[in-house]
Length: 209
Image (cartoon, rainbow, N blue to C red; front, side, top):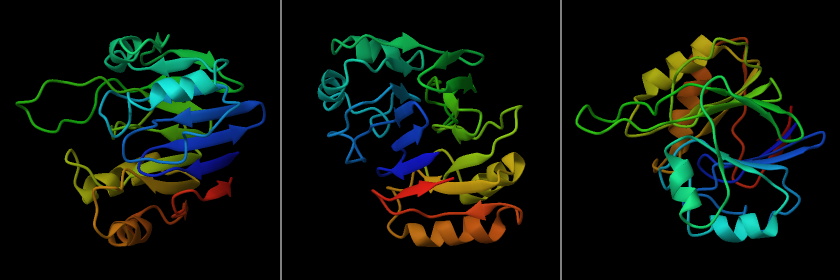
């Protein structure tokens, strides 16, 4: 599996016949020129995960790629003229590899704000992209994308999530709100499970696992 981090929570994943893009949001770049995708996955409706201005051109350049999204994002995507399949926990689908859907809601930002749907995606039974959720799936995870910072989490919660999932390999996502992400990365590496290999790819960097 080859994974390219395209900034914040946007990942380009190539695995055999699969060529998948996850969360092309406003804080991400480099996905605009991709072609040959087999699937586009959206975890939730927030703009840092879903750029509705750039998504139509991406879909037009990849007419063969189905779009899958959580229940909150799906109507917004349809509103810009894109066909989308809404998914929920327990669903699975094939985009060149099997993707299973986990979780239900976005992590709570504040009790006064309404719940937001969130779909966590397990790609090929190996890579978990949790979106904006720290819900631990009830299945083993080999490769974990770990949120590094957000209005809805403290770093200690990210560490606990990392430990609870206990993947063989982990790397950070959701870092663009940090002035110095290296500090958070260092603590996640130091405090994470000793059995896990920690990677910190730069934007645009591809790594293989």
